[in-house]
Length: 266
Image (cartoon, rainbow, N blue to C red; front, side):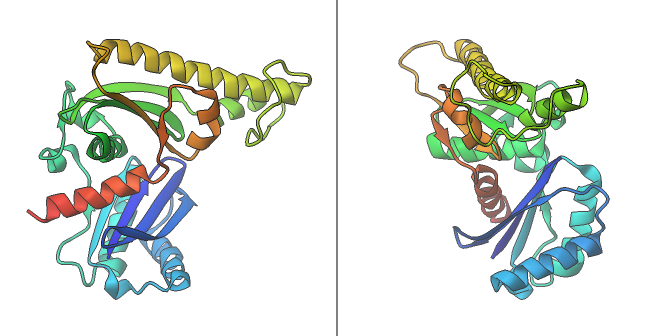
C-alpha cells in the first residue's frame, strides 16, 4: 500500500492506495505547528478506524507547499509509517521528477510541488495541451503542453480569502456561506448580492483567464485542448465557469500515486 500526502496551506489531503485503487482518503486542516508525534497520533487513529495496518504501508510520497509541516511529516513517516518501506518517504521536488515533466521556467524550483503533481496527473489522462485549475487557498492555473512541458500559469486569491477579506475589511458585510447558489445574479439582499458577486464574478474571471491563456497556447483550432479543475471548491464554482470541462477532486492524489510508482520503480 502507498501512503500519499498532499500538504496544502489550508488543508492536508491524504490517502491510501492499494494497487491503483484509492481505499481511504482524509482531508484535515493544515496546522503548521503540528509536531511529528501529533501527526502520528492523528493518523494512527484514522488508520485504525479504516482498518489499515501500518505494516501494510510499502511506500510514502509527500507533496508540500508548507516547509515546516513538510519537515514534521517526513519525521512522522520515518518514525511511525515507514518501518516496512524499502526507502525513505519520497518528497516531490522538481529535480526528482524531471523524467516525467520538463519545466519551462527561469527558476523551476519556484513552482509548487502540488502544481507539478497536478500537471503530471492531468497530462497522463489527456496527453494534449491543457489548463489545470486548482481551487485551493489560492486559485492556480497550470499550463501543460502535449509533450508534458510545464509552461507556467497564473495565480488568483482563493474564494475563501476573498470572502474573509469582504467580511473583515467592511463594517456591514457579514461572513457568508456560498455553498448554496443564489437564485439570480441581481441580489435582493446583502447576502444574495455577496453570493452572486463571488460565484458569478469568479466564474467570469475564470473564463476570462482561460480564454486569454488558450489564445496564447493554441495556434490552431484543430488542436486538442482541455480545461480541468480540481480542489475543494471546484464543484462549487464550475456551474459558473463555463470553460471548465472536467472536474477531478482526486487529481493530486492520483498524481502522487503515479509519480511514486514511476520514479521509485527505476
